[in-house]
Structures are given as C-alpha cells and as structure tokens.
Image 1 (cartoon, rainbow, N blue to C red):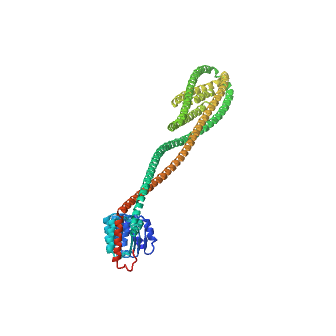
Image 2 (cartoon, helix red, strand yellow):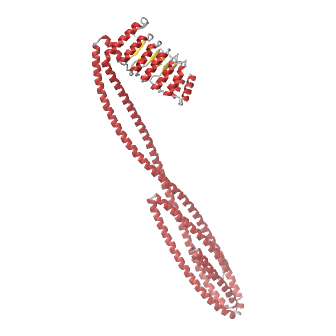
Image 3 (spheres, rainbow, N blue to C red):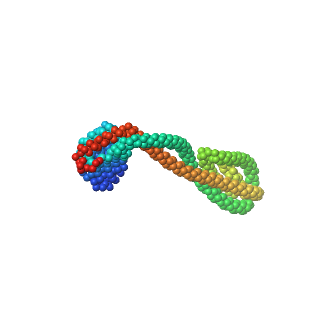
Length: 627
C-alpha cells in the first residue's frame, strides 16, 4: 500500500496540486483490501489521481466514498477509472448528491465494469433528471455481475420507476433491491393490502402537509427574526468596530507624535547634559586657575615686600650720598612732580572710564540675567503648553548654554591674557610702583568683561604709562639717593601706597568673592536645569510606559474584535447553512408530497408489475427468496 500512497502523491504533484493530508493518512492506515475515505471532502485533483490509480489497481476489493461531497467532475473522473478495474467488488457512494452527470457516469460504469457486485447509492438525486436516470437504467439492464443495489432516497419519479422496471426485466443477476424511502415501502405494502389504506394515507399526508406548512411558516418567522437580530447585531458590531478603528487610528497618531517628541527631547537632553558637563569642567578648571593665580600673586606680593624693605635699607645707607646731588636734582624733582600730577590726572580719568565701563557691564549683566529669567519663565510656560514648544525651548536653552560656554571660554582667555600681562607688569614695577601696580591690577580686574579690542588698546595705554612711571621711578631713585627730603617724602608716599595696596587687595578679594558667587550661581543654574531635564525625562518615560500599556490594551481589544468577528462570521455561516438545508429539505418534502399525492397509485402499480415480472421471469426464482 505504500506504493499506492507514493503514486497518489506523485500524480497530485504532476497535476500541480498538493496531496490531501487526510487522504494520505487514510492510505497510510489502509487495511488490507479496503479503502475507506468516508466523510473526507475530496477535491477534483484527488479524484483525478484516484481514478488513474484505480484503473490498474489489483489489491483493493472494497471502496467506500460515502459523504465525500463529490463534485460532478470528480465523480466522473473516479467512475471513469473504475470502468477498467477488475477487482473491486463493493462500491459505496452514499450521500454524495449525485445528479445528472453522476447518473450518466454510473450507467457507463455498469455497462463496462464486470467486477462490482454491491453498489450503494442511497441519499443521492439520481431520479431528479429523468434522461440521466434512463441512462443509468440502461447500464443496469446491460450489467451481468451486480447482485446488490441500494437506491433509497434518490427522488425517483414515476417515469424513472418505469425505466427501472424495464431495466429489471433485462437484468438476471440482481438479487436484492432497496429502493425509495422507508415510508414509500410502507405505502406499497398498504396499497397491496387494501385500497382504503391509500385514502387514509392521503389524509395523513394532507395533515402532515398542513403541519409542515405551519412549521415552515413558524420556521420562516424565526429565521426572519434571527436575520433581523443578526442584522442589528452586525450593524452594532460594525459601528463599534468603526469607532474602535477610529480610536485606534487616533491612538496610533498620538503615539507616533509622542514617540517623535520623545526622541527629539532625548537627543536634546543628551546634548544639554554633555554641554553641561563640559561647562562644569571648564568652570572647575577656571576655579583652579583662579586659586593658583591668587596663590602666585600672594607669593609675589611677599617677595615684593621683602624687596621693598631691602631697597629701603639701601636707600638709608645711600642717603648720605644723596645729599650732594640734592641741589642738582631739585629741579628734576619739580619736573617729575609736575609729570606725576599729570599722570595722576590721567589715571583719574582712566579710573572714571573704567568705572563707567564696569557700570555699563553690570547693567548689561543685570539685563542679561533678567532676559534669562524671562526666557526661563517663558520656557516653563511653553513646556506646560505644548511638547513642541518644549523642544524649541530646549534648543533655545542649548544655544544659550553654548553662548554661555563660549562667553566663559572668552572670559577665561581674556583672564589668561590679563594674567600674563599682569605678571609682566608686576615683574617690572615691584617695589617703587606699588600704587601704580595696584591701580593697574584694579583696572585690569574691572576691565575683564570689556571687549578684546578695548582691552588691547587700554593695555597698550597702560604699558606706555607704566613705562613712563618706570622712567620716573629710576629718576626718583637717583634723586632719593642724593636728597634726604626726597627720601622722607618717598617714605610717606610709600606708606600711603601701602595703604592703597591694602585697599586694592581688599577690593581684589571682594571681586574674587563676587566671581566665586557668580560661579556658584552658574553651577546652581546648571544643576537646576539638569534636574528639570531629568524630571522631564521621568515624565516622558512615565508617558511612554502609559502609552505602552495603552498599546497593549488596544492590541488586546483588536484580538477580541477579531475573535468576535470570526465567531460572528462562523455563526452567520452556520445559520445560513442551516437555513439553506432546511429550505432544501422543505422543498424536497413538498415535491415529494406532491408527487406522492398525485402519482401514488400509478407508481405502486408500476412497481408491483415490475417486481412480479422480474420474479416470474428470473431463472433464480426457485432458488432466491422473494424481493
């Protein structure tokens, strides 16, 4: 049987179709000599392959194809293959709704096949088409091997009964015939017993018809109600499905928009965090440089004090020698004093300019801080109003941080340049120009926020002044060596300059404190911005989690909708199939009742004559029991 199974698979593949799994399973479990494919829905390709295999098959003696829902074409192909078969003894085609083409193919099979002894054709429609049934009867009359034939429930009309009676006259091998439905047989017996039974039966049929009509009307009302209910439920389901689909589309659009916003916000947040880290590193570096600069200045100041003390002792030692040159240098001292006054006036003007510049810079800083506060408030408001404005505000803050970073870098560069210039100036004017150095430091510290071009110009101007002061210092030193009075005045001036230096040092410390406060404020602002961004990320993550939950709920609803829709479709199909089967049964019952009522007596007489003629003319009458 394995060869039979392989041949079936090969023929299906040659025809361009896949073999049926149910057929393969039956062939695998095939008992010896019997092929049972009952209740298997056989396709045309399967019927074609089985027809070809059955032509030369010598192992099977029984073939069961009951309730296989065979089509006209499939039935024809199977029976064509059986025409050449010489070993099959039993063939079951029960419940396949065989019609005209099936009846003709069966007639051809009975003419050509010489091996089939039992043929079951119950629950088909062979008698509905009279010409095709006549062909079947012709094949039956020509057959000489068939011994058992089952024709129950085949809708055989009175003309079909005539053809069947004629076929039975010519057939001498048939031994058992089961024909028509069970109640037909009862009516045949009742007609033979008494004619009055027919009258009672007609009344009973009429009563049954009335009952069937009532049942049919009730059934139609029930079907109409079910249809209305199903229509209402389908409309409600369609409306609900439409609403859910619209809601799902809106959710999908919202989720996509939120995803896009979340991605942009995360990118901006990562960029802001990176820039904040860079800015923090720059601030830390600037703070370290400021501390090292202050320590270095403190060391230099101590060295300058030591050098000043040494120079003062040297001046005292050289005081005696300076008396001789006092007269010569007095005129020079007067001239230096005039120069000194002019320089002090210039320094006063320079201080005023620096004061005005620092005031303007402070005003600009306050305005910038106010604008920053306004922009922050606006950013918070925009963040609450819309995610899109939040993204723009994040970009704005990012640009602002970049500008602040660039400004800090420029400030650090200017501070570094100023620090270098101050170190050079301090190396040139250490002891004798303490006041000038302090003033220059004050001017340089206050001028840190000025533009680079103004700083360069101002530094050039200060360098020129310091050069002149250095020349004056050299001349004053020579004069102090020669004159005691100049030494005394120089000592008084030195004490005054030391006081000024102390004041300037305190001013420097205040400015350093202010700078540290500004740095702390900036660090706090960066920390606050980072915390706000982290809070925003937390809210966005929470929203994303909620969206994922909502997406899962939507998917569950979609699955439920699919299950409900499939169940609804299956219920509709079941109802439609039930309705169709009920209508078909009702139609068949009505046709059957009409034929029974009109043709009962004539069919009974024909069948009786045919049976009697068959019994009287059969050579096996003495050996076979009556049919």
